[in-house]
Image 1: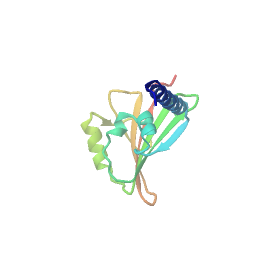
Image 2: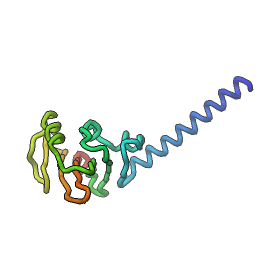
Image 3: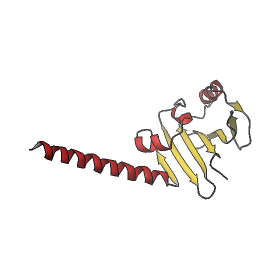
Image 4: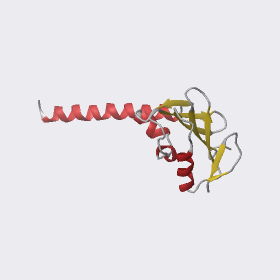
Length: 142
């Protein structure tokens, strides 16, 4: 095969992959919600805030969720650990990063120097038990 033909094929493949990835990025940018695991690398990289990426994994059974509240520009990020109701490691980790208990919510709230971000840690008495860490980001709301 001639060199020019190989170059043309390589450029075509690169263009096709780039168009596909751009389409996926645009699709994720306008999504109202997503449910994914850490192995779903495009969603994990796009939706997951650093706080949840670095949060200690207190069980091996966990999943992520993302919600974009239409009309309010509020974004909600969740990390759910199934099989435990112990929040001690999460509480200690948040404290080590400068978060303090406080704020207004139906569960244990954590705040830091970013008042537009609300972090809550909830336990669920479901079967199996679960711990849910929720971040509500008001930065984009009007």
